[in-house]
Amino acid sequence: MIKGITQMNVPREVYLFKAGQSVYDTLYVLEGKVELLTPPPDERVQGSVTGGTPECLHPMPNQVPSNISAVAASDNVRVLKVDSKLLDSVLGWDQQEPETSTGADMISKSPQTAAQTSDWMSNFLCIRGFQRVPPENLQSVFMKMDSVDVNAGDVIVKQDTDGDYFYVIAEGHCRVTREVPGKPAVKLADFGPGACVGEDSLISGDKRNATITMTTKGRLMRLPKQDFVKLLKEPITRPLSLKQAQEQIGQGAAWLDVRMPVDRTSPAMEGSISIPFFILRSRFSTLDPAKTYIVYCENAQQSSVAAYLLCKEGFNAYFLKGGLMAGAAKPC
Image (tube, rainbow, N blue to C red; front, top):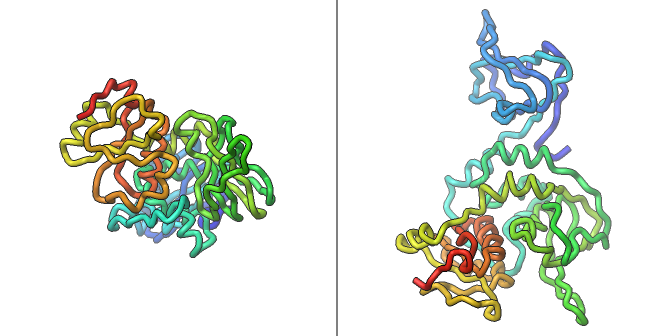
């Protein structure tokens, strides 16, 4: 099981915790029914939580020490126990000062953190952009992820194929390359434990833009596309209409043009910063972490991915919905 998260099978009539008890783990009901009781001596039933319902996404207990008791009210009760420190690492990000990305290469903060610890989950939760993701979404992410063992040489993502999974490197290392017809593959990056890979095509809807190959034996955690979109993409990647974007610009935001020069069929927005998408990761350090960025391209495919990547790095970023083509935007 993942470090920091365990599953428990609780027999009927066994207490998960009692009123007055200090519980420093966060519990979620996966299967079965748990009844919530008032404190002794009466211990009246004041509610219940059943696995698979919206209520099961709410953590138990909701305060320390607990003001209620929880008891298994059915057979085969299964509970997810999460180390509260992991959740605190997510909820505490908005209490901290922003960091400046080094931008030294294409590896995001998660692999930087991974150099200090092999705990992929802690690294994953320490990605600053996930502060926008509700804790219940993160809980669902961990519940829906599958573990896949891989060997050196295994191709995880193949360029020019449809995106199907979002991956987190739990163990081992991989290499990202781009294939160019008639030429050797170009190395783009190396990733280690805690790194997130494969999200670009899931956001843009395009084919995979690179190949990812394991360079060592390892283990991956993967999340299906539909779950990635619902649980991670939607809370992080935020579109703006042209009118909304112009209002943000009027309040001090900056346009960020991620088009390649050869792809520019529409004029650039006045005063925009130009950083082509394929080098954006290496230019994070040139951007002001205190500024809001409105990212755009012709059709919003690359700009939506760019906004996601910026938000992951802790920037406040949006993308122009539909791009310049759909918005019929004029330089402003």
